Image 1 (tube, helix red, strand yellow):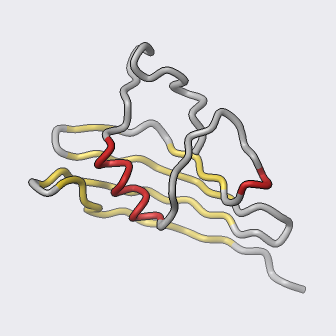
Image 2 (cartoon, rainbow, N blue to C red):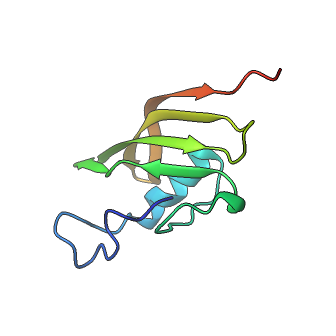
Length: 104
């Protein structure tokens, strides 16, 4: 995941550290472990970009895009919504699209 917008979230205006529970819920939702980076590293696997998280009380949402490396890799985008419950953050909605090149 790209960290370009908020390199130092604690010190940047309008930036906050993603709550750990929300990051774990996000990782569960996309079935990937997240590592925040400052630039794309194509040889390290799929690359995801998140929009800034929008918080509204006990709700959070963001849009995303992803890209698999290589000429035959797929790409996609979507939106995920979360809500905070007594047991932590849970996915509460969203959508996703996937596009893959036609083998030929």
